Amino acid sequence: MSDKDFSSDWHPETRLVHAGVRRSQFAETSEALFLTQGFVYPSAEAAVARFTGEDPGFVYSRYANPTVAMFEDRMCALEGAEAARATASGMAAVHLAIQACLRAGDHVVAAKALFGSCRYIVEQLMPRFGVTATLVDGSDLDQWRAAINERTRVLFLESPTNPTLEVLDIPAIAALGHSVGARLIVDNVFATPLWQAPLSLGADIVVYSATKHIDGQGRCLGGIVLSDAEWINKEIVPLLKHTGPSMSPFNAWVLLKGLETLAVRVERQTASAGRIADFLAGRGLPRVIYPGRPDHPQAALVARQMRAGSTMIALDVGSKAAAFAFCDSLRVIRISNNLGDTKSLITHPATTTHQSLTEAARAELGISDGLLRLSIGLEHPDDLIADLARALDAAAGLRAAAE
Image (cartoon, rainbow, N blue to C red; front, side):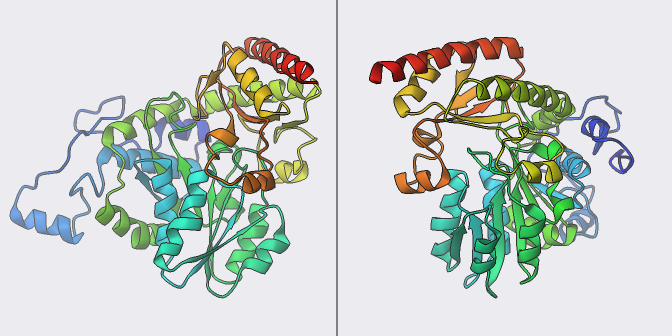
């Protein structure tokens, strides 16, 4: 018994609670957890029909699973995608999406401002299989235009970027890619599906690390690839089936529960982030970057492309020593390389998430030794501001002593 077809007119908040539900014969309220590897058939003939696709039922949980399918259907209803496939992690989703588009001799163009593991796939892994890659300044459309050629099959970007929260022009970049038949893949994790809809902006494929806001409570890993049904079925399904980066049914169930509260959490976190960004901007720091502020470098683009700012803030306290003193002085905010959690988290990208980049590459991306990436959680904003004020005093004291 399925409710998955009754979501087209619902608001996003309602889709996040009800879309994609597949109820068993017991008509349970909460989504059922189908913790099973395989499925049985009433006859040998039925098994044949299932394997040939004549009967569209489930065969093996590495290929598809009812709980995982509910998560996929709910994400499609939220994102406005025809089809999706869930993966074991966010990086599995990125790898699967890029690999599915490329063959030996093809070319990929990507923005330089990428998470370290994403750059590894583009710069180091794909060239092993005969794919060439070009990295560009994502905010410079002329660089995209110059890099694209007749062999380009994929354009890849994050927006907002990790960790400097640069916002890229998705419609313009998509148009450049489409002019040569290339597909645009957008990693939308920092925006969340609530604040940015890449498919409606011209992107062809959207990927998420569901580990972040979708779970949002630090419990499990997950990822998802969303696109048109023809491409998903032709390119993603065979790769997922034969290489096995599938999501576990238990993780899919946890993520379904996370989706039910996504809107409430992200709206509250975004409101707090905006208030905290304003506080930080008044403290005389070298840089405070937040997509919801008028002083953001791409503020006009943010207004056109995003429905709201972000749960993320980037701040520069001047030096590595000041950054470490800042982090070590925090009492409420925790040091962690995750983000999108109910707990506020901070990390020093130059020595963690982006430490594999060369010093020159980090400098080019604006990842200074004093830069910190702050993910705002659900704590009271007054407590977070007090925590940050104390840490700022500690960092300022260290700077004063050094001078």
